[in-house]
Length: 207
Ligand SMILES: [Zn+2]
Image 1 (spheres, rainbow, N blue to C red):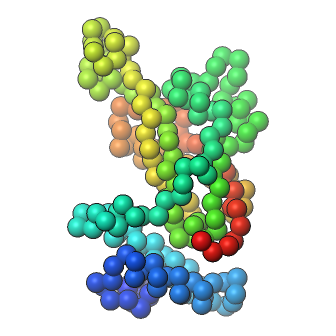
Image 2: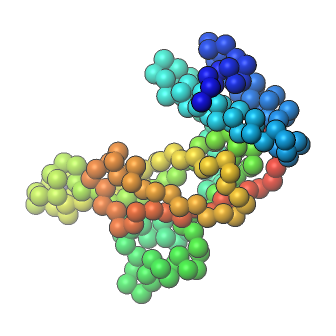
């Protein structure tokens, strides 16, 4: 890949606001909805933008931008029955209602309402993942543990930020691999390896 700053026509010292502003200008000009011939250019611009934004966001010298990293509001994230069950049981659904049953019914665990532009700009989606974890204090081995009361596990809801591929289609159900979460929290007890997320694209209006 070419230098992302070069692709966006920016100086390497450009701050996050300048990068965003430049991206908005370029997307107006090169968006394939307006001109199919510029699709490849547009893809390159989006890739460069996402790379720069993520670099700026994780740079420890740039905490301000990390705070302002675009995230969709939690009101637009809807959890189906499955996650309530996960919260209560740690990825175990009741005896009369199997995981397959509810997935057949809902098709997805989570529905996210997102604007097309947010999708393209790589907005983060803060998922609340209810988890069951091996007790971090006693490791699940102590009868009189103050943390788990001897149960050996705890329930904890984790916030996990994900981004969807910009090419996600309306109502597409995207599989969210839970492996990276497990790598960050090795004590997680996961019955399922992935969640299904339905992407409801609200409309294509500018935000
Ligand atoms: Zn414990």
